[in-house]
Length: 69
Image (cartoon, rainbow, N blue to C red; front, side, top):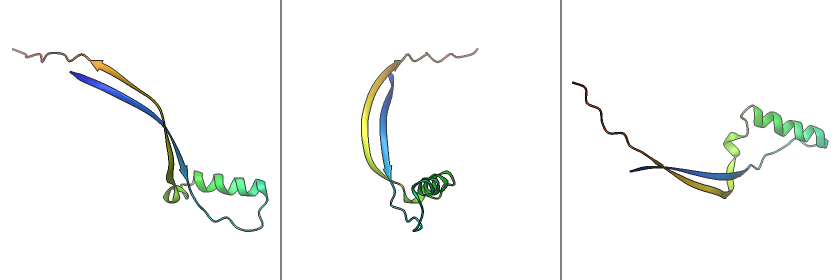
């Protein structure tokens, strides 16, 4: 018997980054978004928390092997 198990989790990642001094709130947001979009923050992202949301299982009916003559 084969079963397909699906687990849904919500993962929260956290990064501690340096931002240039003197930026206003809008510029800080833009700096963070730009850095994230260019992949510049990926190396600093660490999993902070994982929340379990759901788990489900589905039984898969196995088909008998068909042998050709």
